[in-house]
Length: 108
Length: 128
Image 1 (cartoon, rainbow over the protein chains, first blue to last red):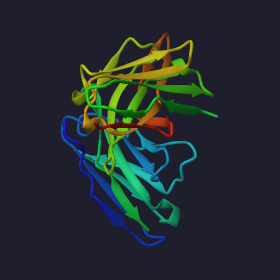
Image 2 (image 1 turned 45 degrees about the horizontal axis):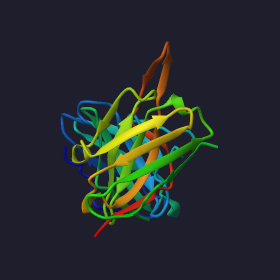
Image 3 (image 1 turned 30 degrees about the vertical axis):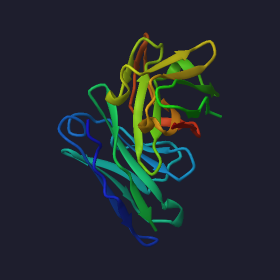
Image 4 (image 1 turned 120 degrees about the vertical axis):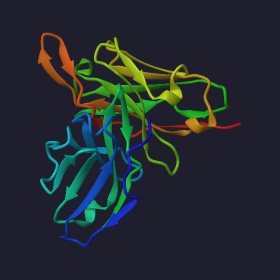
């Protein structure tokens, strides 16, 4: 099973909005609503931000939102803040497995 | 406070074995599916295996099938990963993670495959 495809990097200025895409296939993202998004600061434990495509974890800012269209999921971060600078990973369920994207480095 | 603490990592030669442990606290351990996820140096996250709430189901990424075994002990609130026939490409930080699992009553659990509690990881290095 191949990894999901994410852009290697995205950047934005404070206050702006950015979107990170996560492209899979009709066997994973396209087939199930089990897409999750994680924020990962290097050297720390990853943090679940979004699960089941659109559900925001309690305590996560409403500046973070998830969506899906066909085989592509997206994470949108509005009102960018310096603390948002991190690596972001998407994941999806498929055929009794979980696959991750390669990760996107967000620079603010 | 929900907490997961991994241990058992280290340096091992190719072909060797290691057993990772993950101690859970602050939540009812039998609530949830659990996973092991790894991150090789300079690489992204890779899901390794998961196990359901009572240990009756387990699944693996193809690259570790037949070599790794995930298990759990509800009396010890612990998750394990037995790793045999280790390869250089297994070198990574290994994280233990809890699945955000729904419970519908009458013994029916449903994973969301979103991992909402993570440990800080234990490092496994496979090298001669």
